[in-house]
Length: 319
Ligand code: SAM
Ligand code: SF4
Image 1 (spheres, protein in one colour):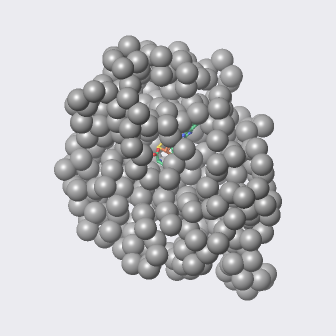
Image 2 (cartoon, rainbow, N blue to C red):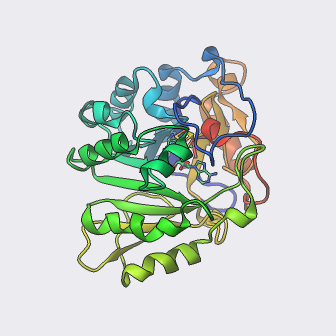
């Protein structure tokens, strides 16, 4: 069992499978020029599979693939198929910007993907293009609709709310949960990545987001799918749900059940701490076993991580 010194049981592994992304979301990228990781630094499928097998042996039940944009990684369907076959892995999901979903949703489902999260922060074509660096909302919506009819256990939308950009859209975004069988999750804007555009005045606390959403009607407590930190509700008669994730205003470090793996194979015990373990040293025989690497990660997992912004950009960590 993976239980840290504070008694937190680790069951969730979040793996960034590439730091590359077609989008340039204003809240995710660092300012100024940036370098992508060299190809040989990125974990291979064999390495990812070995890590997941050891994680599952130690008690990991849920794996989420992320990035950068995970659907950009060549062979993503093959990777999903390989991981889906690991005995004991209960849940395999993916977080995507949705741009390539319409082409990939069917093969991903057939390969064994159980759930999907799509990032969608605005319903305005113009703002979407401004946010992402020129991409089309229409194509992402197509991917969303196809995902909804593909038979996944859950389809969720992630919306990061930024003051002065999309805070006026909370109600519109929440409305999607009335019409569609989707969970719309609101997330506070986090200070991740050196020189990111983050500024405290742009954070909209979850309490305020919830207040805005409640203008649509009373929120009733709802059942949660997955092992994430969202507080989940639904509107009376709605097809879907709404979730609220408050890493800043009411952090959930005390019940944190996850470890992250960066695209270049760093095991990261906390999103907000740059302390990492280089798994490649363990995979390539320079250090002990992968099991020892997991144990070391538990030892250094911070009690409370939300202190300062991190150095790595979000696209290298995976959110
Ligand atoms: N490219 C994929 C996507 O956008 O869904 C996966 C990677 S992205 C880094 C994972 C999640 O992190 C997305 O839902 C994105 O909205 C979120 N994210 C990125 N930067 C963020 C920030 N500064 N604060 C809060 N969430 C952020
Ligand atoms: Fe946007 Fe995701 Fe790409 Fe970051 S990794 S720029 S959030 S699409």
